[in-house]
Picture 1 (spheres, protein in one colour):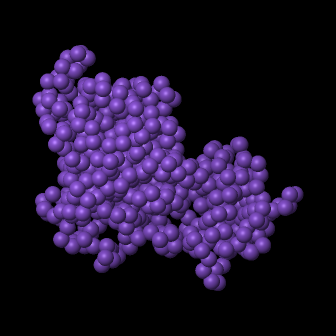
Picture 2 (cartoon, rainbow, N blue to C red):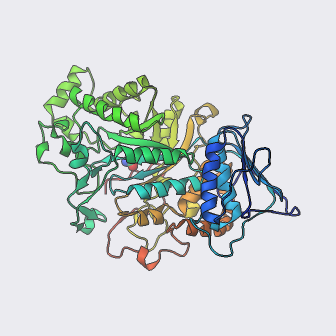
Picture 3 (cartoon, rainbow, N blue to C red):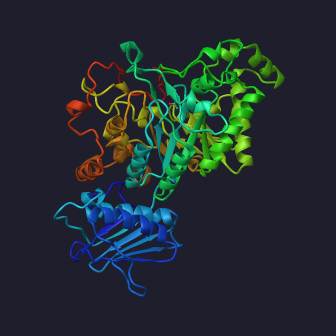
Length: 545
Ligand code: ACM
């Protein structure tokens, strides 16, 4: 049946007659399953052209949806025979996953938005019992370096849901763009929401695109994205990066920057790639400013976790700034790292007081980790190991393994090669829990995430190419009960199932990288990247491009 991600248990019944969905099929919905049933009906009606009306009261229905409180929230059972397909979830998310499994069983055409002539809607007789390995199965999308219009984000949510991924981490702010409307501070998007031009490829290539680049989401756009994702079992985690990666904000409100060492009023939204030195100052006024920003962020995003970045914060300006040094002295801090910690700890408390939790990149470990904070371990496993060993929750997303901006094959045709070669097989063999963690620390690895940085992906088409098919392998790593030893994983079996999965991606309209390489229009001849040689070391760091 070639399901991806592989379920916990599948029992095919090859001798039993299959289920056939037809124009008269009806849906029966038990209490609590209404929302999931609406979704499934909308998706399958579009694909099949069948109405899939509710079964009359007291009748069984051909598709039967119900909740079972004995199951975990994301756990589900799917049972298909000639009579019916029964979908049972521990909660709405479990039912959503069951619905995705049903789509895979129905065939690639179940992913289309309108029926093709002569389609056949047969589901083989089967029993599936399924539940995820990790509660956090994420993808981070950088919409700051290149803006992805709302429709593209909704489409990306569909792609995540189809792979049973359940967290969309939206990187909303960076040096090169501020993408979330803040009512109180409109210049964040008026000024920070666009840049005059962009670098094309790595700095060394010297290429520029003089077309201004920009865009932002209104709060209503983001509410729509959040609700659309929630209906598909996906939580949107917003990232507002602090205190580095902030040139766009400083360009909009120069008082946020280190005004005693740089003329921040002369700054624009950054037009280079890399890590800008124009970080925030750490004054009380700046903390208040970001509290106001976050008040609006919390109104829009109901997720428990709020990502506050904390990565790659160059300390040069703080070292030279009398105001920053006075602040360090006033607060009794040792150095600039402790000043960064002060900012992160401040917002850790601030979020906790509002019933939320801070998550940040592993640099938040430097200078002391805020007490309730969780860590996105990106510079390797080390940060995650240190954090989990100290009792902090961790999302493993090491750049050596699951940075999907990195090239997926060697060779001159791979578009804008950055980082290491990370093939589909490499991602399939990524293990989120390092073996040196004991059971208690391993339990703090709440999940894993693939990160998609978009410096070299100007549109959703390039995101498609870099994200897929690797996100399918990543989904299996995050969901399925694979051998913990990467070498023991059945790559040949995954590759075989991928042969059935590519037509699903085709039906979804995803412009993935085909196994044989980029199509002519997927190449970017002449655009210089920054490939790293050799296999990635366990903790090799990536310098700014
Ligand atoms: C990161 O890649 N700077 C989190």
